[in-house]
Amino acid sequence: MTTEVEPTPAGTTGAAAVPGGRRKRSRQATAIARLAGVLVSPTLLVLGLVVAYPIVEALRQSLYTEGQGLDAQGFVVEGEQFVGLTNYTDVLFGHAAARFWNAMWNTTFFTATTVVLEAVLGVAMALVMHRAFRGRGLVRASVLVPWAIPTAVSALLWRWIFASDGVVNAMLGQQVLWSADGAPAKLAVIVAEVWKTAPFVGLLVLAGLQVIPRDVLEAARVDGANAWQRFLHITLPLVRPALLVAVLFRMLDSLRMFDLPFVLIGQQKQSVETLSMLAWQEATNVRYGPAAAYATIMFCYVAVVAFTFVKLLGADLLGEARAQVRTKRKSPKAVAS
Image (cartoon, rainbow, N blue to C red):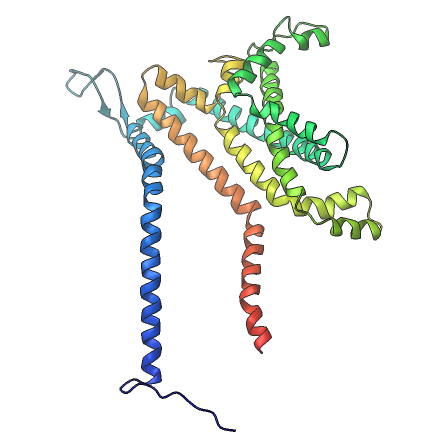
C-alpha cells in the first residue's frame, strides 16, 4: 500500500509555509480586534463622558475652594482658589472631622445591618417562592411591589407609618418619636430599607435556586440527609454565586444611601446622616470644594469595599472557573495520549 504526498509548490518548503499561515491568522486577528474596537468605541465614549469626566472633575474640584478669602498681602480674593489638600485635611482632621466620622460610622452601620438582614430574609423568601404551591405566581408578583416603588415614595409611606399618631405607635401603645434624632430614627431607616430591598435579594437567589438540578437534592434525600443538611451542604453552596452578586449590589447601594433617610427622617440629623447627605449639604451651600472632597472619599471607600469583597469572597469562584477552563483545554490532550 502506497501513500501519495502532494508536491510542495516550487520555491516553498514546509518550514516556510507555516510562518505564512501564522501571518495570515495574525492579520485576521488584527482585523477582528480593530473591528471590535470600532464597535465598542461609542460605548467607551459615553462611559468616558458620564463616568470618567465627572470623577476627574470631582478630583480637581476637591483641590479648590469657592468664595471670598484673603491672600498673603491681605487683599480680598474672590472665585476659585487652589488650596491643595486643605479640604481633605479639614474633613479628616479639622473642624469638620467630627461630623465626617459620624457620617462614616452611620454609612457603615446602615450598610452592614441592612445587607445582613436583607440576605437572610431574601434567602428565606426565595426558598418559600421556590416551593410549588397554589398561588405561587401571585406571591412572586407581590414580592416585587416594595422593590418597584420609588425610594422617595416608600420613604413617605414609612414616614406616615412611623408618625407620632401612626400605625407603629398605635400597635405599640406608646408615643415614640421615630423621626427625631436618636436610636429610633436608626431603627426606622433600617426597617424601611430592609422592607424595600429584601425582595431584590430574594429574586436573585430564586434565580439561582431554579438552576439547581433536582437530582442532586433527591440523591441527598435518599442518602438520609434532612432538610437543614440539604440546605447547608447542597443548596447554599450552589446558590452562593447568585447570593454574592446580590449582596455586592446591595452593599454598593447602601454605601451611597441618601434619599431614604433624607425623606424619612430629615436632613442634619446626626443619628442618620450619611456621606452622601454631607456631600449634598455642602454642595447646596455652594461649598463645592468640601463637597467634592466628601464625594471623592466616598468613591474611594466604595471602591475599596467592593474590591475587598470580590477579592475575599469571590476569589474561589474565579478560581473554580479558571480551573474548569484549564480542565477543558487539557482534556483533548489527555484523550489523544
